[in-house]
Amino acid sequence: MRVKHFLRALLAVTWKDLAVEWRSREVISAMLVFSLLVIFIFNFALELDAQARASVTSGVLWVTLVFAGTLGLNRSMATEKDRGCLDGLLLAPVDRTAIFFGKVLSNLAFMLLVAVIVLPVYSLLYNTNLFIGGLLLVVLLGSVGYVVVGTLLAAMAVQARTRDILLPILLFPVILPLLVSAVRASSSILQGLPFDEYSAHLNLMLVYDVVFTAVSFMVFDAVVEE
Amino acid sequence: MIEVHRLVKRFGHKTVLRNLDLQVAQGEFVALLGPNGAGKTTLLRIMASLSRPTLGNVSIGGYSLPDQAASVRQRLGVVSHLPLLYGDLSAEENLRFYGRLYDIPAIEQRVNVVLEMVGLTGRRKDLVRTFSRGMQQRLAIGRAVLHDPQVMLLDEPHTGLDQDACEMLDTVLKQVAVEGRTVVMTSHDLARVAALAGRFDVLSRGVICASVRSSELPRDGLLAFYRKALEQPCA
Image 1 (cartoon, rainbow over the protein chains, first blue to last red):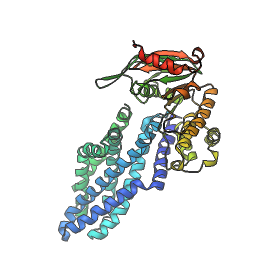
Image 2: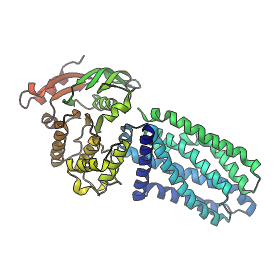
Image 3: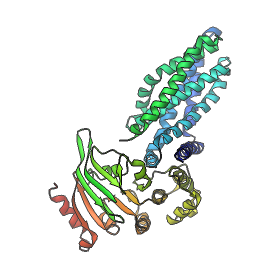
Image 4: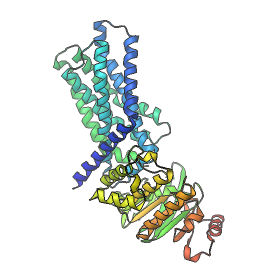
């Protein structure tokens, strides 16, 4: 019964975020415009030959996703705080981790939607095929870890007046191991290296995702309480 | 119903509540009065399980905070000066969403009853951001009573409302109280709370320094009582 209530609350939070976003389009539009601008700027700023392109593509791709993701995470939590809705959520007699994972699911949906739009545009502009199974797996693993940590830290930063600045300052050092692994794994895949060359990076990303999901599960209640 | 014993709340070096004691019986409507910074909102946030006490005990309906917070939240409805509603959801979508969080059975029927109670049935499909401040506050009360709580905590619910909206809100609040709920409300508007509450507690510098029942007050005597309470030294 408790599990059923937990899942129902989790899905209710996700549904609410998606419905609000469907009507306001605040988060997605900000993330998308930012991502496309970054891709265009890099495209025109770096005149790359084929070999150079293969080596910088993964870096540019992850910088784009991570910065756009920060915009989305900030906006997603600010919406809760501005009208007192975060208190409304915390007042519900439900395990607060249901609220956390509900927010994680919706933030992940926004992040993946941006990736789905960014990847083909990127492929076209940089004349590089990004639709490779391995690379899509790296994007998924990287997005999961990023969104889990980002949602937790956004819940912490949203209490502060300087939340827009605070989130990237808190988030980027913590996601560094994930980001480095994601960039290296992506680069190896784009260069057509064998699986053994980048499997360690995939393992690290997987472990990062599991560890930080568990940590977030344990500390979210304390993070949101005054 | 509500027992607060020697409650202390500190934010860093600043002590907001100092060994505060408060008892509220079942069905009682208590107005917490006091100047800005007296600690009213802090006290309400602790009772609502949104903030942890530094020291002291708080129990609501026999459940202590913060250990049995989920049981307390099940019995608690909270209204603040912010609506706690999503502007991009309609009135019924907001209530349905909170209904799912509270695991309310037969949610559609309950949503209908609550919308009827706060007089918003005709606007049920409209987005909340198109509502006036008064309508949003009525819907906020609807959200707070959706799970039929035994205790209502109201933190300056009249803030930002015009005269008509205040009167409409008072009608809804009276209905909430008539249904036998225990209500604790903070307010600066003495004239308005005088008509609603059965007991008035004055909070100053983190302690309750005076308390009186409405039956003990002379007609229009609340302002004089309030001023006298603030002038006297608190323990």
